[in-house]
Image 1 (cartoon, rainbow, N blue to C red):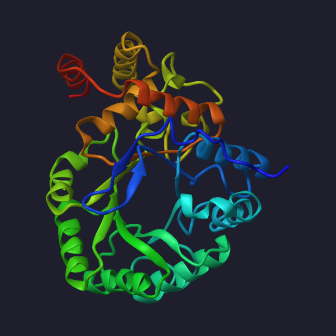
Image 2: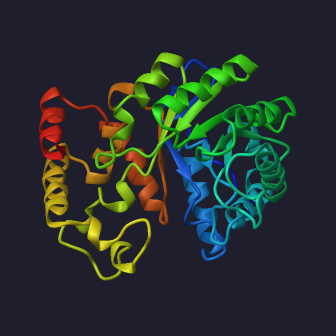
Length: 329
């Protein structure tokens, strides 16, 4: 059966201008990091993408190394795009990145011109696209001159392989330099993708100020702190949870008694607000409108529904923010 998008898909989503650009992003974006590789059933990935787009989530975020194995998320997304979403290509914002290890040898990692342009060419081939909407440098390279990396981003826009470019994981001072270089080249930096949640707040120490001052948008990844800011760990660490599996992204050592107590206190506030802890955590990242979009991962459609449901109650009173702050410090 041919997929037909829900006719009311834009009614449930809030779209927010990305910095000073002409582009608007959905308040919630879907990341294809963990649940779109070859270890996931293609039908499940397809169902997640259908539900996301039917809910007004127009921004789909990938990277060259997403899987597992690396590259498989782009390949699987490319297949679903061909089979289901080609009529809607111009309604989608598709992003990819390069900056982490992708292939062997000295040219398959970091931030050289050689690596970034080659990687994007491979990503476009895997997804069956002529261009991506956003192409990011995924992390700073301590050895390659920043000018070379930014010139590579400028080049892919001029080649028509990307409409916009962004950076990810850049600290405030380096982000400011990168943004200035791109402005001088005539290819403004659209967006920065940092890790940001109630439990990881480094962006508040200068980065958000830089982005606001320079008119650059932001999209927060891991806004639920790897699942810590959900109801999954309210009663401890379940045997079948990510934290119990020895995952490098969340392990039992991170869920200390003090951390779990904070989670329970935050959950009590969320319950008073009539929402789940995960919904409150997403709303908190969006508070004050300094973050353009929150980037969620999902393995079930219900997680997408929960995230979109957050928009019905995404604002806080001053008293609520003060109470949350007291718990987090």
